[in-house]
Image (cartoon, rainbow, N blue to C red):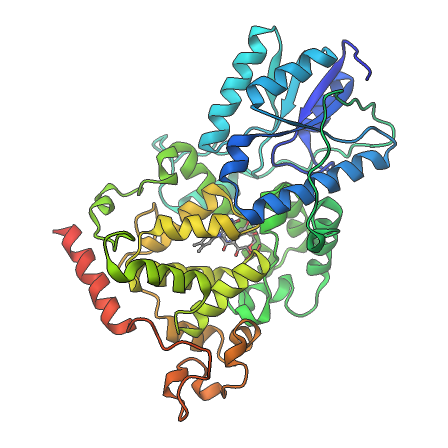
Length: 464
Ligand SMILES: Cc1cc2nc3c(=O)[nH]c(=O)nc-3n(C[C@H](O)[C@H](O)[C@H](O)COP(=O)(O)OP(=O)(O)OC[C@H]3O[C@@H](n4cnc5c(N)ncnc54)[C@H](O)[C@@H]3O)c2cc1C
């Protein structure tokens, strides 16, 4: 297809949208743009089934949106980015490749390799914007060092402010190119057709903002109640860049309500964890607090019960209703409510004594919003080994958490069919019901009080 001196490449990585997209704007400012996605075997190997499926649906949605303007659509190629990107740039004579900066450890290494390969051919990788409201590495504390604690980070984040959304691109009047070497788009799972993509994300976000009950106004009151399903569900759209946080924060600023401010604060947590990982790339696998590497965990291949416990947790068959509901929601929907994520993570680490990284791996396999910075650092937060983490000795009680946040059992009944008819009085402790646990539902696999003490003893040992 067309090869002109002023063609630029728009390299899509996790920013599947046309609106509020400075890298796309920059590519079009060069002249014609070739939208490129590289199916990178190194990334696909590590991506879980849920994220791979969402990726395929997101590719289709973006391709459709691009074709709507009459252009040739998205060019998808397979291979190592450091080979593919320079090859396509050469094919169309692009001097510049535009992308939003990637701040994850793998993305940084990959982009360095691509920049070097492009540079050798006299071309340039131009990084414009980021997937965050405030890019990692931007904010430092008064002594010029990275923030370790969220609250002062948040204060500085508020003072720093956020850019306005980038101006919209007119798809039909832009000049688009495609690569001769592009491959067919991977097939989309039936259940995801029409679910992924910018248009759907925008529609859902607007609908949530307009909701009377269980929308933004009720967020401070209801965000911890999993049965109410009163959170924004933005995480998938933000993970894939169907929406940019800038756009979301602008909409929230216009609301001027406590709910809007509370939600914006959560988006600052997203920036905070990305900032932490930018400064501490080892945190994907190593504890931020080094003393925690001495913590005794039940090794899957050495402790008899550990492998069975992990399996029961993954399958939602621990005998603890809130934990099981959460793990089943994850499998069924590729998403889990935040309060329940904390409870199931605490249960794996502090009741089953299994290393947090096993839980983080399972989440990355099954979450559609699975994101290395958000996932690993939230797991470290629960484990107590992250920066600004919950103290290790604060152990979630899976029973009282259920009673407090799912008192009427709406959430548990939704996901644990065996408990659907258990009266509210016994729902959180079904083994105390006169007839015992209902058929098909397990007895608790461990005793919480005993394991809580065990966790505290192990914690005391690393503090000695
Ligand atoms: C063990 C564990 C693992 C997690 N793994 C991920 C993950 O892989 N990807 C991911 O996006 N989030 C992760 N989270 C954070 C949080 O649970 C989800 O972002 C949230 O549940 C998504 O639902 P929502 O969009 O309705 O959130 P809302 O409550 O509506 O919040 C709005 C947005 O704020 C951000 N946010 C909210 N809570 C957090 C938080 N604790 N940390 C960082 N950002 C937050 C998210 O971008 C979210 O979409 C994890 C939390 C825990 C405890």
